[in-house]
Length: 347
Figure 1: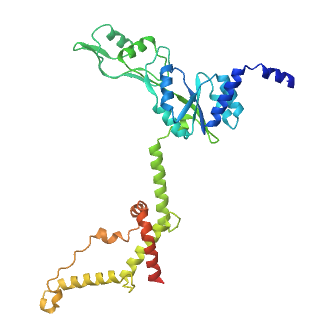
Figure 2 (figure 1 turned 120 degrees about the vertical axis):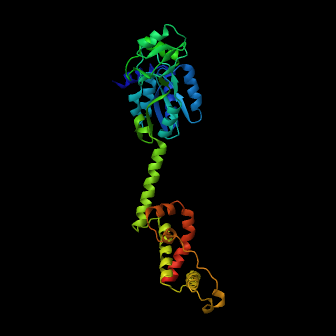
Figure 3 (figure 1 turned 90 degrees about the horizontal axis):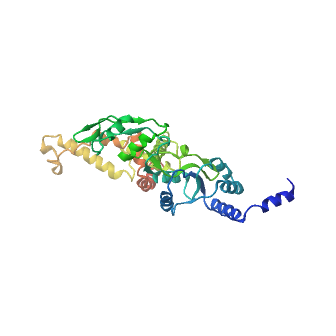
């Protein structure tokens, strides 16, 4: 195509289309995340309600598919990958939220809706057991015709058991549509179906965004705790575990100092308390009070610490490590004293 032909072709584009493509381009460049959503089958009133619900967090922009495609290709920057999703009734959605948050919000905004004859069942359709609330009449035959177990009982039409009447992917008949509408069963959801979203150079599809956020957070926390435990138990210091390791080492050094009766200023109070306890225990074993100094007569042996508590300071298992990991503030306060104690004790 010659340059003159290209100019003539450009000049034939209506001005309103140029303006529309320009506005779409501005829309695409305004947001960090841009997606394509299907709006097929959504009544205009519900669509307007969804727009209002998204206000403040995301924005919908509808236009002709040809103009949307042109704008995506014109912006380039990777957004042209979204053109594969521009078919049928679609809209652009823009947000500064991350794609996972956008997907979660769109899924939460979906509402149940009746299904019409000729539509494909989005999932298995089951008519639940129970009283239909419909007076005896031809409706019992309609229920039985679509495959529901129904009979007249106690002056009403009742479904006697949960009845599977259609498989996912099958086409809904007019008879079944009428029965479901009569019962108020709404087997499908109406909402904005996200087909794809482009964010920070990455294209995401719905199956990549459908994650359980709480489960994912729990997995990350568990992995972090496991890594922390491994670092501490393997004696591999990091910026995150060094304070806990110093506190743990200080505690073990103190226990060793007490056991070896090292006369260190830091340990003297504990050594005196330990000696006093041993003295009282010994005095309590002597039956002849005349053989004891006056201040030790009638003393009782100090209560022995439970075995669990006696072993607690020397425990190095993962549960103790996890407990230390949950209390980093206390660890930080103890770290300074622990380091000083180590220096004074071992030079």
